[in-house]
Length: 66
Image (tube, rainbow, N blue to C red):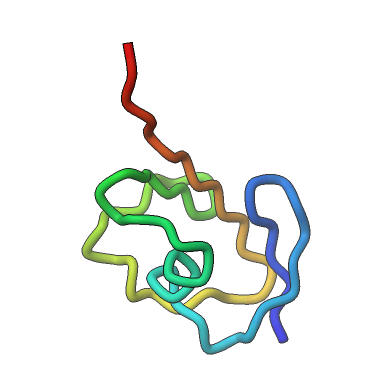
């Protein structure tokens, strides 16, 4: 198990999960989000990157409206 911080909350997850797997788990669409990994914006082509113990992940979800 890996201990990570996701949007400020500590979670325990399977160490073999990728960012993409995490998005599927929380039913988030790649086109509607931006991800910051350990203080750096993560390009979409890097979403297959495996999550490591103590990673800090922030996910921003874009919402349309007016």
